[in-house]
Image (cartoon, rainbow, N blue to C red; front, side, top):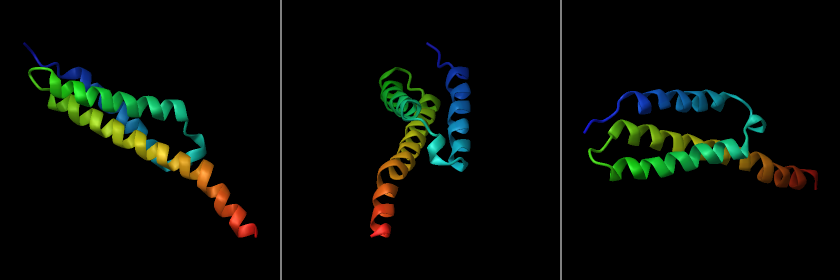
Length: 92
């Protein structure tokens, strides 16, 4: 059995690209894209701990993906739902 090195290592590019999006305004984020990144991270994090031998590189990249996806979703939700309430309160 072998632990494949390049697949999870190249997956770090997705995480780095998502990290670079932190500097962009949240309006440019997409719900479907960030949900897919988050779900992929969560599902494959679990899978990477079930397979033998454990692939810790795969686990770490997927935890990073899930975390960054959740952060991006949080930014987007705050912008779309909570900034409207704050603006309405400020107008009153």
